[in-house]
Length: 281
Image 1 (cartoon, rainbow, N blue to C red):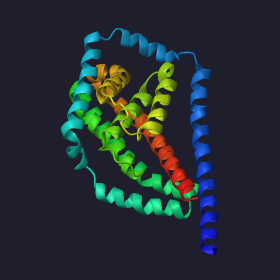
Image 2 (image 1 turned 60 degrees about the vertical axis):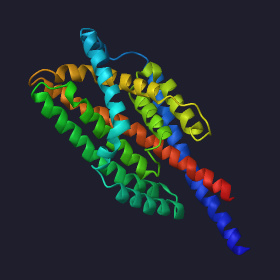
Image 3 (image 1 turned 180 degrees about the vertical axis):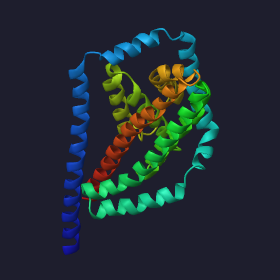
């Protein structure tokens, strides 16, 4: 009887701690989208950027989009095993097991930060890698050929975050979520809220049996989001020496995507934890 009461009280405390962290994440997201709505106006930099992009040949935009799309197809069909050679999956899974136990025993912000610490360490290394490969190729005026390399590093960071929060990125439904998160993190302000709702909806319903999927469509959308976000930088990266400026954009795109992805994985992790506690109670 006392043991059952202890477990019940423990579950209530855990639930309250997770609820508090959940609310904090929701408020953080709401502030972000309110900021977008309040800003409304296009900044001088954005106006300048849009002006330059209008002068970029349409062929480059199409080539960039097709390049990302083909890279997604290649990686999802044959390249995941290659990316997995760049990190120790078993070690990351073990870290998650240990950190997950820590959260279950004491679900506060400190234990959740421990869960994030290893993930963020890997992200810092990957960010430096994207800068080196971007600038290195940019010096020689090489822009488009680095698409598979950049996408490989980007997916490496996402896969590490996925393992770090206990999710299996190898499943098709999980790959669709990854594509939707890439799209939402990079699309323009006018579509950001809609794309974010699409991510939230998929996270809620992705485990429903016989749910309709269309991974090709999501690959197209993610490819478009990436190509639009990197159009100017790839244009500059195609010029000798000046390409260094274009190459510097790679780590900023990487960080923008991973910041969004990490937030969503953390939110999803807390959702799963809250569900398991309610089921026990």
